[in-house]
Length: 445
Image: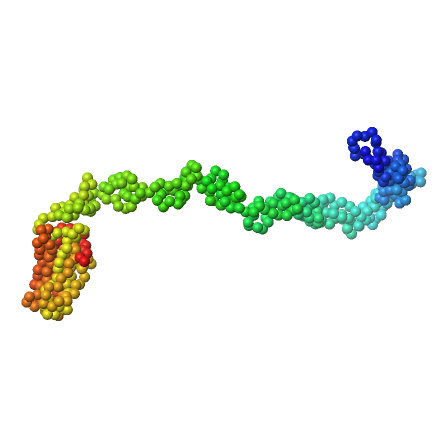
């Protein structure tokens, strides 16, 4: 449909791509012309050709021929050697025309040739010499020729391995053997950037990856991150631990709606077998009490208060003859020494009979010719009072040491009163029958 075309068709309604223009190839239907093309007048014409054999390897190659007419002749083709005495005339390997003399044996008559045939009496042009082509039968060699010993041998072909696909990103033009190493756009690679993933060669054969974005990639989790392309193990799910930000709750977990909620905490004894079990408590505070544990029944006239098997706090009633106990279950004891005129020579202490390391420690005597004393709180058991005199003369005729407590009715109970009139040391053991059973004491401030 192009008005400038030599074959413009005014009746055509749709261009079918068949337009021909000046210079386009054509066929003038003359077998004796070549390079036919459309001229400026839109006529098809070609150059007058010179027919002949245009194959340089043929025996009758014509260098002036530019149109092969099929007349080429090759070694083995029939010919006429002009000798009426020969038959089967053909072109030999050197394009010479020769025939066979009837009754003769054709072969190589040159004794210097590699294929000399002593039985032949007619040279058939088949002689082969060192340097002539041959085939050593080894597909791994090239340039096979006869050597000086007329042995056929070739050169070992050293192949260059590599990618031979011209469309590949790593095409190797010097390779003559494909080693399967070709890589193409879309193939995996490593762009050397640890902050990218899914590295591949792009259409320009450049290796590039996606920027690394860490996060939770599981859409079923409570903290799914749609922008993440690398899972960092941070996914959390309903039932997982969390922190609802409320210090008054415990066991915080994500619920089925992925909301973090905890149980309101309440401290107390959570052991149902304890005497002070609290069913409302959610956090054990270590206060559980059991039968046999010490308690305080609120009655100052009892001692050794403990929880009974029925979880009732009860103590042992004290008699008027017993030492009174303080609120902590100890017996306050006032003890000391009556000193002479040299009080700095003397000291006194009380220690537990079964464990001497439980002691009041040495108490200094500071007031001459008077009672020096101190009060400590003691548990029940045997106690020993010891006095020392560095000079060794005791406290003369009126010296003594003592220990006493107060009864429940307020009267004084003498636990010991021992003279100390000579010597370096004196000890006396006494019993406190009530109160805490462990050998313990505390200073009475």
